[in-house]
Length: 149
Image 1 (cartoon, rainbow, N blue to C red):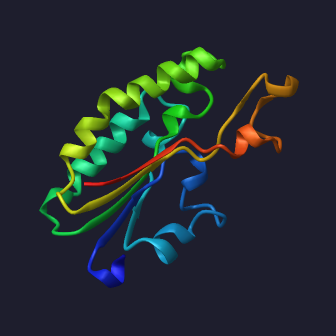
Image 2 (cartoon, rainbow, N blue to C red):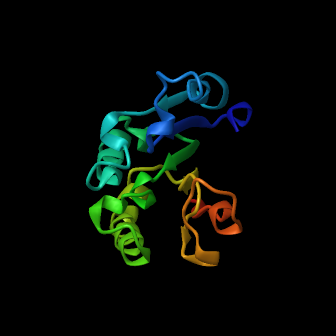
């Protein structure tokens, strides 16, 4: 998309996107013209999506003619904003993202490809398994949305 004239911007969420780690420093170098991550975006914070919206607002993205925008929403990651490590807790955390999603879209220009994603799924008791540090089809089901605005 960069070759097609799009500004490519990513905002990481979970701690794995911390660019100080060798396993994660490639995002800005190899995949995006600009890639941002902050401790405020981590899954251990309350409503990290709100902090990511603040970053998107600071970047003045609406001024772009063409934009590819990626965001990893860590709210959907354990501990699910403290709502509980269960399906209800994850659902409540996702509800917080859903409520703020229109605000994100309003910060972006009309010609935008938007990708908002979690980094993996979670087992919630399927086959007696919980969490994501395992291989299971539910862990491979990655919550995401891709929109062309």
